[in-house]
Every structure is written in structure tokens, then in C-alpha cells.
Amino acid sequence: MTASGFSIDRFVQICPNDGPPFLDLCRVYAKAAERLGLAATTVFLSPSRVEPAPADNRYLDMADLRATRALADGLRELLADVRDSLVLCHRYRAYWAFARSGLTAGRAVALAHEHGFFKRRGRRLGQRVFGRGISFAGVSPTIVSELEPEVGTALHLPNALDVETIEWSDRKQARRELGLPGEGVCIGVIGRLHYKKNPELALDAFRSFNERHGPAHLAVVGDGGLRQRMEERATGMPVTFTGFVRDPKRLFRAFDAVLLTSGARAFPIMVALESMAADVPVVAPRLPDAESVLGAAGCYFDDRRIESITAALNKAVTSGISGAGSGRVRDGFSIDAVAGRLQQLLI
Image 1 (cartoon, rainbow, N blue to C red):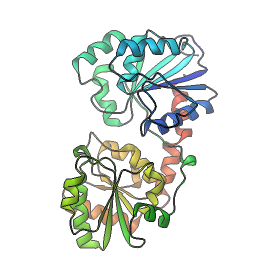
Image 2 (cartoon, rainbow, N blue to C red; image 1 turned 45 degrees about the vertical axis):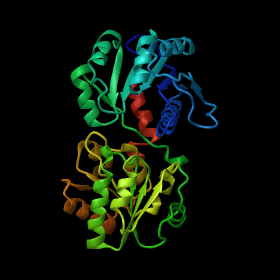
Image 3 (tube, helix red, strand yellow; image 1 turned 90 degrees about the horizontal axis):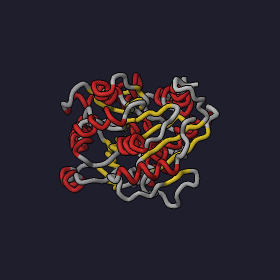
């Protein structure tokens, strides 16, 4: 029974699209809800990016996510009665469409996956008018802190993995599929090649590591606007650019360590979780979001000097964290962990 007087027996989540990592993440939440005995429904606002579309999802097929009135009307028709539901809105667009729909839920939570959720003045004003009765949460401590001046208390609902469904490739197979050397130390840099991810810093750090502690190889898994410039900078270095790889987490055991050099506002939570689940050491900046995910399983550098990153890489490769990462994921970032957090929302 909630404070509104309704007994919740249904879980509804709304998400703008099913692009990575949201399809997997929504499945995690649906499974967690079902473990609590709740019927689960997932609604994506835009057309499916997955072919064929998963049968257990619903799509509004709205091509323009800026069309708030149409989105709200679609939700109101699709979710005619959510009074007995726990509703979770992933990202701002899903929250805003639900807030404008006029639907009333037993409990509604808007989950921010990115910084700047209420950066725009219009969003702040809209929250004061239409956001009443909706709780807010962030996937990281810094996002929670950013939300609280606007909404008061905000919850921390970190991302999670369904580890049981990951079909890991072993080291040799993964290296073969990525086009990497079969033997020797290999460092992975995974993600979009965008300035917010600082992949060029990773390239410079690897150059230093290879000179001091090599021989080693670097795998840059992903694509983006910086790729050509990085390839030019990597001339003569033992670096493989794989380009885009579908579902790269299954190949993480190819690496002796994964290097993350993103700034404080763009820490790649899912890559960190996937690396830990594979028991691959993660090298990351000592920042609140990184520490909240990695804990004692992380190999940290305290500043962005090349020497600091090189030392952390060497520590990761030589000492490893066998077993520590997967155990941390199981305890705090699994389906059972999400179920426990959802249970608290039902009280």
C-alpha cells in the first residue's frame, strides 16, 4: 500500500528508445519487477531500433520526440489505468510525456541518466507545474546532487546488468573476432570516440605505458568523429581500431585491462559494469561516479597526468582484480539488487 492509498501490483517503464544500452537496461528492470510479483510493461516512445522488435515491448512509434502533446496522448491511450502501478520514466523525454499525460500512478519516478536534466529554465518551470507527485532519481551520485537543488531529495538508482544472459567469448575467441594479437598484453578502450570520452588521452597514456612497460597492444572499440584524427596520431603504434562492434561486452575478456578516461560528467557506467562482470580490471579517474561503481575493484589515477594513468595501467595489468569485479556486480548491480531498490519504492 502506498501513501496514495493504492496497492501496487504492476510495473510500467517508459523509455524514449530501445537503443543501447536501454533495451538491456529495461529488460533488467522488467525482470526485477517480476521477481517482486509485479506484472511488467515496457513502453518505448519511438520506433524500434531492434529488428525484429522484442515481442514483450510496446512502441508508440513517434518519430518526433519533441511532439509532447502527441506523446502524452499516446501514453494516455496505451496506459489508460496506471493507478495501481509503479511507473519509472527513463530520461527527460519519457518523464515529460508522462507528466503532461495527466495519468496518475501509485508511484511515479523520473530517472535521469545524464547531466543537465533541469539545466534549461523551461524544464525547471515545467517541473514546478506538471511534476508534482513525481519523485526523481539519478543513475550516479553526481546526477543525484545536480537534481536535488531543483527537486529536493533525489534517489540513487544505479544501472545494472543481467549477467546470466551474457554469452562471454573466451580470450582467444574474443581476440580473434576483434582482430587482435593472440598473445601478449592488450588494453581496451571502449565507447564512442567523442571529446567527452577523452579517447585521445587514453591513446597518449597507452603510448607511455607501452614505452615503459610494454610490449603491449591497444584496442579501440567504437567509432565516432575523432577516429580519423586518432588513427593519424596512432601511426606506428601497436593499435587496432575495430570500429563499431555490436554487443561488445561479450568480448571484454580479450583485454588485460579496460581504460576509461572520461570526464566527471560523462563517466561510462555501463562499460565499467560490463568490464567488472567479465573480471577485467578497470582503470579510471578517481571521481565520485567511478568510485560509486567500481569501489575497491577499481584501479584509479588521481589526476590526468600521463604518468598517473600509466602507473594505474601498470598496476591493473600486473596485479589484476580476479573475482572482485564480478562479485561487486552481483552484490550491487544485479537484477536482485534492482529488485531490492524497487521494493523500497513500494513502501
